[in-house]
Image (cartoon, rainbow, N blue to C red; front, side, top):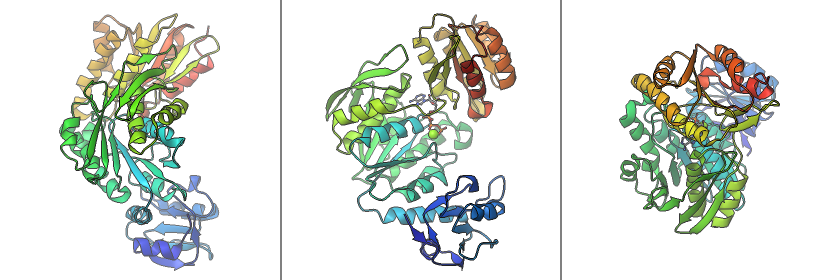
Length: 458
Ligand SMILES: Nc1ncnc2c1ncn2[C@@H]1O[C@H](COP(=O)(O)OP(=O)(O)OP(=O)(O)O)[C@@H](O)[C@H]1O
Ligand SMILES: [Mg+2]
């Protein structure tokens, strides 16, 4: 891409101060990951982005999108607007509106968005030029950045869409205008903000509602919320899941010794065998939804399967490592909510360690009024999974610890990750398989790293 300050100002209704011919080749909201030639967008978060404009220019920014004038080099420009975040979205909408031969795929849901996004990119990768969101860039700044950074020649843009509040997804869809929408699952993530289960359904439904009649909604056949979503879209609906009456059926899922799923995928485009490199039974559903997007976009089933086989795990999502002394570390510490804890414990159950099954489970944050019941339910899941030792971490998890102890599981409670690290490294032995999972705020990846380095090897 290459856009002058003048063109940017016209797209966002801004006022130029400085050189209107300054050229923008990328956008950044954080001066630390800004490339020379970027437009720095000064957002107001915990700190005021305007305070970092000087740093951005020092790192090579050519333009800054700002709400007030700041110092700038003579060869650079400011584009002054009322609302830089809104202007970033307008710039992205402007870019997207100019595309004629690009398909935008939107992916939302309470779990598995990033996994499904990465798997979709892999499923399409062998046959189409694909651009996907970086990491979990899925919000009102991340989605515009995804669109604005789309290289020329791209055929399919795969955009993760996250929601913290009702209306968020609808706003993202106005910018991205997807014609294919995937809802991985409607669950309890961010329940506190979204007004409970009904609010979550409403919010995730905004994606399918935004699809045109010529588009396709890809829904989870095994999610009880899907019929309600299907009723809200003008687009063709394809359901994907284990249910035999799904449009795309996931056959029996077999996990290998390293927890990698293999299954037959039967669809109107034919049946194909899928073997994944990513781990955990839940990835079969993510991969099947990703495959469906590929099939809808005309990619051959064999090419879809070959692409999926190459997809790799993002960090902290069911990463499997063995310490030098033989402690098996299943690091799923990236995040946690009730659905993903259930999935992770199902994988631990499927794992066959020579030693014990140990689960280090921390708080699931943002559950609002559901917190107590959901943390108690984790104890039952741990019992079903055959957990031999449970270390519950964080204040909410005290409920998990109490229930688990009553269920007869050897249980410890740690106040925070540092205490957890001390408890775990003192008790875990080579041969044990240790699952680590909690909301990001708990930070259990530090315990995973310590174990993988051999802190519990004796
Ligand atoms: N289909 C699924 N069902 C249950 N758990 C899942 C599923 N897919 C992924 N997970 C688990 O949920 C966690 C988050 O996965 P992922 O990053 O793909 O989700 P996300 O929706 O992008 O999350 P975020 O909202 O943080 O961006 C991981 O621990 C992963 O193992
Ligand atoms: Mg994500």
